[in-house]
Amino acid sequence: MVTINIAYTAPINPAGVEPKLNQAQIWAGLERKVRHAEEFVAIIVACDVVSEGQTAKGFSTVTRDVTFKGAPAPVREVCTHYAPSRVDFEQDNGSFISNIVSKGPDGELLMTYSFAWAHPDLADGSPEVEKLEADHWKTAKIAVEGSINTIRRLVNDKTIQ
Image (cartoon, rainbow, N blue to C red; front, side, top):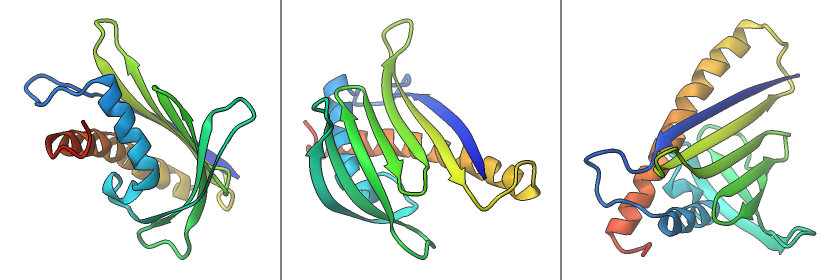
């Protein structure tokens, strides 16, 4: 079994990009992403909410089935919200993803996606692992930047206030 761990961070409001997004808008976007993942992540083609609940500590959870492009079956994810800065996605195969909103030293908003991709069928050090790691880096960059761009578009079209 191999777990590939990757994290990618991007600025939410780089110079020259409008509108500038605030923490509340970013959080609203992450909440929407849990229910409408296909709007945010190009490789997700369907997202069906199965149930909603709370953790023992009172954090809200959404259980969903997401279908990835080319995948034979949906993946079950439990999404836990830690408002206003983090959503964790735990997949039924053991993979774990965190979407984190933070601030840099000058107060600038940053978005980080941290991935622990489980590959139970692969051996450590195999050529397949090296290729998958390179692919996961590309996916991480696309996911973070695509999510920020989608939130900005949803603010522009007034879906998010």
